[in-house]
Amino acid sequence: MDPRISRATTVLLTPDEMAQADRLTIEGGVPGIELMEKAGQAVARAAANLVRSGAGILVLCGPGNNGGDGFIAARCLMAAGFGVEVLLLKDPSGLKGDAKIAFDRMDLPFRVAGADENFGESLAKRLDGTDLVIDALFGAGLDRPLSGEGLALAVEVNRSGCQVLSVDLPTGLNGANGVDLGDAIKASATVTFFRLKPGHLLFPGRGLCGQTTVSDIGIRADTVDKIAPDTFRNSPELWRDSWPAANPSGHKYGKGHAVVFGGPMSATGAARMSAVASLRAGAGLVTLASPPDAMLVNANHLTAVMLMKVSDVGGIPDVLSDQRLNAVLIGPGYGIGPKTREAVEAILVQERSTVLDADALTSFSEVPETFFDLTRSTENPVVLTPHEGEFAHLFPDLKGDKLLRARQAAKKSGAIVILKGADTVIASPDGRAAINCNAPPWLATAGSGDVLAGIALGLLAQGVPSFEAACQAVWLHGEAGTEVGPGLVAEDLPSALKPAIQMLVDKFAGS
Image (cartoon, rainbow, N blue to C red; front, side, top):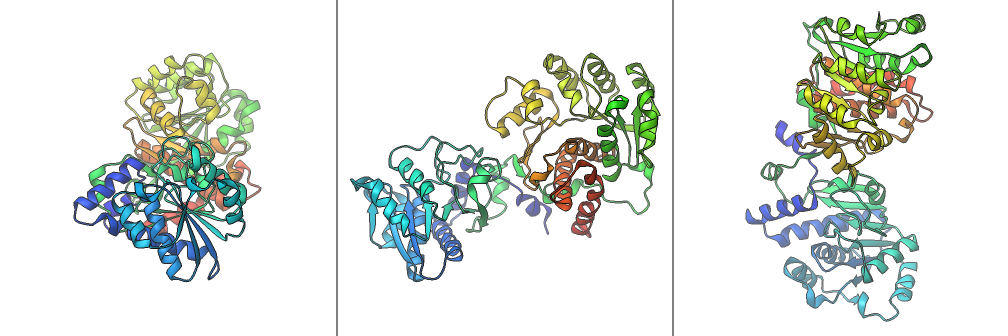
């Protein structure tokens, strides 16, 4: 398989970029109505799979191309023997282009929402006897709150509890960022075309789309090369070329030596979990740099991870004087305050690949510009791993949707930012961003983030580029969480990395 084609499948297109893909395809000689026909037929197939033979289907059609897809789906479903009713948002006299062609081809009875004086009451009655609603109102063609009959339709559909199939995107959802523009339709399933959009993966959009499928409508895969998008779905296809495959003639010293700086005796568990996760992620050697009072408790819990006594911040340069120690993590259980700020500075001036997590981030919440001066000053990779609370303290001036904020934070800090959550976003200062979608809800537990930081550390130690290392770490973390399942505690995760890594070894074999 051409690696460019494999990588192209991870691309996410904003609504504007998808419109560009359509335009380039049409300019290349494919008629727009041909694309629309294939889209409408895909919707009809998806609808037929959701209901029994002969079921009643209400198709809601908007005034643009999304409505055109709906007209074609209605025609196909009627021909297949379903009971189809078509409701237009606006009078069809305003239809243009391919949507007008699709409407004329439909040749079915229809009603117009705005022409019905008892619109709300009559719609409620129609919905009461409907097995499926096809939402072909706006799709990606809306970037403002719903109003008028469109709002009334969305509210009534949601109130009805009917099964809903949305075309491209649920009406009222912003495809670029997953934001609910207000009273968005909650779909049971969504059919989109060519490539997913960020709004399909970012919450609340992901929760509004239901089961999402992507249909091929005849747009060439290499079209994405002409668009050059910078947003991706985080999956192995995105970073397979950077995966640190095992070298048959290699040895542990060729896989890096990671260092985790741990905290006091009363808070040792977090750093230990990070260290073990780093080793499991493939670092050749891992050392936990421990305060003297925590040496005994750490020694009682660690076997393969080495221990080194570090009395205070002044000892950090001595530890890192050994150039073989090439990747550093500080933050989990380290403590919050001025001494942590001093430690972060002492690490960053040593020019190592660095992961800054938890306490290392919180310690700079009152002096964020000092933090950014430090992270921007190093030429080596820096990865930040904030959850939303830590992010808000460190970047209080950044507002907007999650994707935008993560990108802005990466640019401001000069670091890779892993903005954690159910829809973790990994952003690079160069503008690239990936949205993760394999994390199970039971990862929301104490210590889970410490393991994630350790995985990222282990990958950086092996020389994986920082953006790819962050993406790999987030994906592996999600897979490990799925492997453990409900009842997960953070201590389960390092061991669960083994089957996740085995999956990648099998997947990439021979590539």
